Image 1 (cartoon, rainbow, N blue to C red):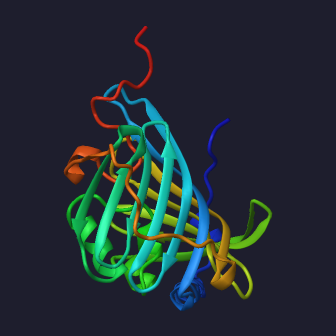
Image 2 (image 1 turned 180 degrees about the vertical axis):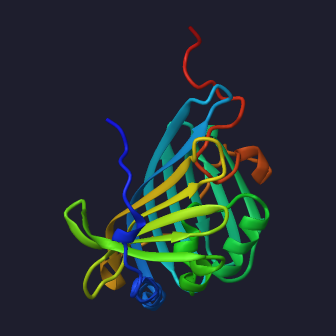
Image 3 (image 1 turned 135 degrees about the vertical axis):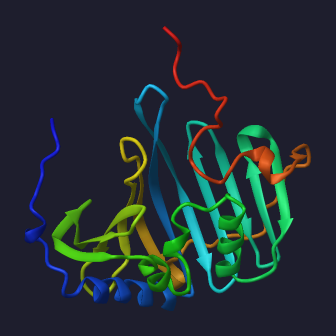
Length: 245
């Protein structure tokens, strides 16, 4: 199976920004919401083999300053909690945890983590004004077409920046939530992608309840955040990736 090429003239851009702004405004208006997700990140080996690492988990957000996030993949089992005062990252598979003082809003937390190289994947969709963050540096925007993702009717939008291209599928209708989000690092060899798919999005009383202050087992070891690895989805550089032949 090979990828196809399409002419850019098939796209139309008249309402791409308006649709993205509607999504941003809708998410910002939800004070409490939760969702399940599946994510994948691609990596390219020194011999130009492209690998895809898949994780899944749950997220619960309570604006302006609380989040609980779980992520289970082949290399990590993480439980992340922020209660407005402390950020706790529990590496269940490592029987270790890290905890830092981080009083402030979710926007401030995400900015701090990004500056530290430990960004929570997909956090740009959860900002109080995701539109401005997503549109920063965009040079081209298109509304490609309508689409159906996991049975959900969506609007398919694409955006270009100097260093990355990104795509988003937004649920059509009165609840414009992001269903699929893909970022392509186009100047990296073989253009690896990050993908996030949102499922079972719930708001208000329908949202799953969460304890944002994580309870750590008594025998877990406290370590520096760097010892747990970044809060991303790639294995540590020393992790073996398959048996040598």
